[in-house]
Image (cartoon, rainbow, N blue to C red; front, side):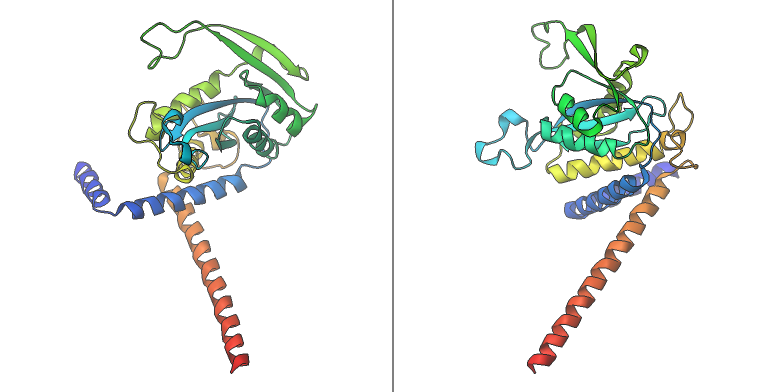
Length: 287
């Protein structure tokens, strides 16, 4: 029965127009993004790890035509923060790898916290300005700079270089050396690559639009934060961080999307009624 149901669902999806599926992704992504923006506030995080993960939209950067550069095609970096204790992902951003994107990402992260935190990043330089601008001196911040061996000839394309060492640098405050690590956020990078085909390195399932890419990320983190039980915690990250008390299911996410859609429909109807009323008054005056 279950196998038949899955087959029927797959047939229904195949018969659905592409723009209908895309519209559903956009609406679900918007709903999940707005819900998490409101829910993930006043978080008592103590230790955060930050990193970036590469993907591409439309085409890899080197293959983007010159006249299409800067229009949401090419490299698309996902900036991600994870709480080392609860494994919650409180903030993320999709964009380039510039200082401006780093600032927007870290500013958003800082606005969600209630207390002083320890932050660890890799050696990416834009973090220095971004964290200083968002936290000032009220943070314990360290960088973990990894040292890589030269890649073996013939493996450059498919295999990452071997890590042969790491250097810990204390930047601001008094970070606890025992917790200067990016292991959890790097594992989170693997999770999204394994869970979302858009992030597979060699794939034809890459995102075609930057907006859809960002909405797919929001949908992924909605499920990760609220529905996916972490093996070591035995609860979801949202439960561990006390954002919610219950274990969510996919039907709960559907309820969030339905509620968001109802609000949007109501707002559109109210706007249209206001426009119709203004036009009716204008016609009456002209008459």
